[in-house]
Length: 354
Image (cartoon, rainbow, N blue to C red):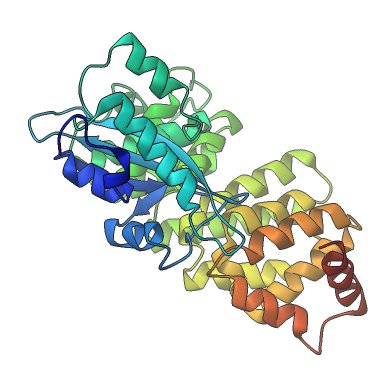
């Protein structure tokens, strides 16, 4: 490939990265921050499979790439549209490739001129995720490339190791938290967090839960979080603070939502008479894999309808039916002979609206 190679000669992003001689890693950064295998992404690019975790009709992807002699990776943060079947919009992907090739040619890691910078910065497919996602992504990349964590890692580890003043958290940085959580299976990290969890103030617990949502971790930690969630839920109907804490604890379990203990706990939670809207939204947005069961999903939809908010029901229904892993269960639950008249009516109204 030469610097003037026309974009039309490059069919996919995977091909562009390979032809440039770059090493690269792919991450989904839409719903959670998780690894995306090269094989899976190539199938997505060829429209052989739908994008596995769409969010609001888009695939949100981070591509970290570097040359062998380089230590520091470059990063593209892409938001590419999907069609109604969840397949990648080929025209948008090709447009992105054309912009990149026009600006950089074959050398994706070259120092860019002012004109090239302008071309790249006007790229409509680049976006900036929330800061907590960027922190988790940065931590994951460092772990994957076997690089040292940030300077904030050690202060957070020391904070968790201390015995007394849990309110002295001002020296704790979000990047240090995500660096620690990304290494949760290393050394004694899981045990440290387990001991500290009951003592963490809201200012620390919140970013810890945001980081935990992107990691799979030992069952002892899963069970401790579930226990805290269950006890917090008892008070969440009367306290806004407890509602917030319960949603944080639930989102902390996101990457583990297929675990048998989490699925059982979610089924128990949905058996309750009343749940907050915030908790239901978090379940769909973060722990959707725990809903991959016809009866559990039906129960979830019934809870949504209890809030008499058809707009939220419609939004969440469309979000869940777009997920390839949930779509079959969504259709089973809405066709079930056991569905309530309220659910049948809501679904009917939804389809009439188109």
